[in-house]
Image (cartoon, rainbow, N blue to C red; front, side, top):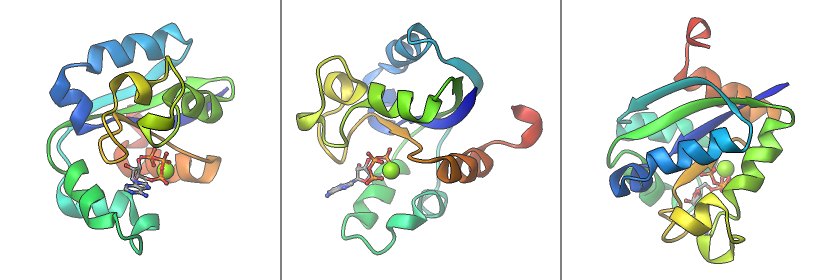
Amino acid sequence: MQRTFAIIKPDAVKKGVSGQILARIEGAGFTVRGMRMIHMSKGEAEGFYHVHSARPFFGGLTDFMSSGPCVVLCLEAPDAIKQWRDLMGATDPAKAEAGTMRKDFGASIDNNATHGSDAPETAAFELGYFFRGMEL
Ligand code: ATP
Ligand code: MG
């Protein structure tokens, strides 16, 4: 078993598709081990996406992530990191395959509905950033 960190981003919460996304997560066989709705401050979003701090889209990305409530999740499944990345689809919804979260619920590369950790080290950092040990 492996755990990964996921976010239902502010655009998806605002559109009212959190329930549909959760149903797909559960339907795909993930166990939800942690779940909370939060509204990140700009600083909290900057800390979360610190690896992108030198990128030109960093300001817009952290404005977006702090623009409204989102749902943070700990998901468990065999090979969860890759399985959730596959279910999310490509970063740019226009390039994502049919049936993926980003194709079906994302509007653009800036408003792409979901986040998923990309490696075991990032999953550990991201889960620890949003959840205390006793919550999981
Ligand atoms: P995430 O980390 O949100 O799950 P990802 O791992 O698919 O997405 P990253 O390269 O980590 O993609 O980029 C983080 C986020 O930054 C993306 O989800 C996207 O919203 C935004 N982003 C990435 N590349 C660009 C770009 N070229 N232009 C605008 N926004 C971008
Ligand atoms: Mg990423």
